[in-house]
Every structure is written in C-alpha cells, then in structure tokens.
Length: 392
Image (cartoon, rainbow, N blue to C red):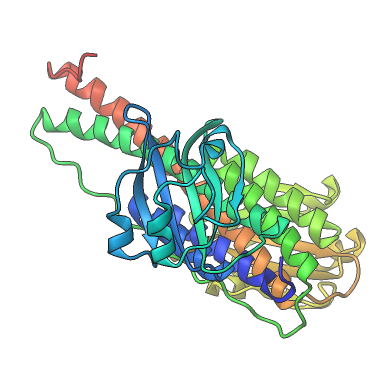
C-alpha cells in the first residue's frame, strides 16, 4: 500500500462494512463498494457485475464514473471477458485496447480505459461475479492494493448471500401472515455509526495494514456465522494480539440490574473476575456517553470500581470503549495494561471499529433468532387456526 494511503484503506473498508450492516439493500451496498474502491485507489472508474448462470452473461449491478454510452455498448459474455477471473484468479490487463481477452476494445479506447484490474467476487467458495477497476493510464497494482480490492470483493459476495438469507426468512414470514390478512411491518434501517478519531500521533502505515486485515477477518466472521460468541472471541483475540495489552473483556449492560455482565474475557484471573459485579453508574460511566474513556492509573481513579483488586491484579491503565448498536450503548469493550500507556489516534479508531463490529454481531444474531422465533410462532399459531404455510 502507498505509505500515506493505509489509513484511507482502513477507513474505506470500515465505511463499506457500516453500509453492509446498516442496510439490507444489495444495490446500496454494491454501489458504495465500487465508489469507495475507485476513490481510495485513485482509479478512473469501476464496475461490479454478477454472473447469470443461465445466459453466461456478466450483468451490471453497480458502476462508478463510467459513461452511459460505454455502459450501453452491449452484453459481456463470461467466456469472452477475462474468463480466468471466473476461475478465482485476479487478473491485471495492462493494455485493454490490445488484449484478446477483452471485449469491446474500441469502446474501451474511446472511454479512455487503459489498464483493468479484475477481481473475482466469491460467495460460498463459488465465483458469482467480477469487480473491476479501470485506469486511464498504464498502471501496476501493488500486492497490498490487490489485497484491499479482493477483501472488498469478498465482503461484497458475503453480503449478497447474507442479505438473501434475511430476505428469504422475511418472505416466508410475510407470505404466511398475509394468508391471515396480516401485513408485516418493515424493519427500520439501522443508522450508520461515525468512526471517530481521537489523538494526534503520527500514523504507522504498517499498523494500518494489520488493522485492515484484522477488521477484514472479523467482518468475514460476522457475515459467515450467526454465532456472536465466535465473533466476540475473535475480537478479543485480535485486541490482545495487536495491542499487546495484559487483558481484554467484553461486557453487556443489564438494564434491569444496572450491571455490566461479563460475556467474554481473556488475560484476567478467576479471582479478579469473581471480585463482584460492575455497576454501570460506578464503573467508568462516561463510556455510556458513547465516547472511549482512557484511565491512566486505575489504582487511584475514582471513576473505577474495585481499586484494591485492580492493583492486586496488576492493572494500571484501562481503555474503555462503548459498544454501540442502533445509536444506543449496549456494552463496553475494555483493555487492561500492566503499565501506564497511551493509545494513538489510529489505535482508538481501530478499537472503536472492533467494538462496533462486536455490537453488530450481537444485534444480528438476536435479530435472526427473533425472526426464526417469529416464523416458528406464527406457523404454530396459524396452524391451530387452520392456515397452512406454503407447501413445496
């Protein structure tokens, strides 16, 4: 990756993730994916096409900065338009006006297209489409740039499958209720959360690449499984690996008891974990405002509960980050250090992203469980009423 572009890659990937998790509209997701990829890599234009298995055509689903004239040039046939990509390979065409693997060479010349980067869109180990970037001049794409584009293409493919799962369940439930004259209300769209940056330290490009890869792995996990426990365990693992801290914990707010209930932790002793409950009004409550809070010395700070126990555990600094879902703080991700340390702007940005990803995994799992429960409930209820679901 270009040295000063690494933080842009991390932010672009995070923004696309936010759209994926705040919208079930595949069109919105793929349009933003193409736009952010083009802008972040400084390409001339981009497109995303999905493979129609019956016609063998590559059907356009999203494009950015391509002229209407070019888009109307004709159909793309998968066997004639860089076919190696459908075998799962990344292909760079250095001169689109001369390469025999390219359809519509004259039209590409007229559009000012020279180099093409073509990346497979994969879902469930099958190539379902192609993400392409177009350059107006000869260009070499670095390994890191290709990794970035490939990651976005993969996330796009998983998003298509993920949205289809929710869509199918919604259609099942909706069709069942309509048989009884009940209209299913639309699920409100989840608002995007803002990624905040807090410090002024110089950005370390190598760290940006690590953070991007960590976020990619966690996003893949969220889109591939509805088991939030696996995602949370992965979040904690990445925090410990990349931040080099003593321990990490994730707690959710219990609105009834007003306590922070432990969901997962690593690096903390059993004795410390059994010290007593954490109360949201007494344990770094400023985090409830939706802002990360840094405690330089947890052994003496009045915002912290169990000061003596923290000293005994060897905890000095604590970074407390809100876990936000639907504009509401539902829990906290905390990092514990054995020494007094500071966190850079980029570290806090990355950790905030992880905390939000954890919140998304939790809410997604609950939404899916609720949908499955609703479907089962209504099937049973309508069955008693003599109304049957679709027979297939």
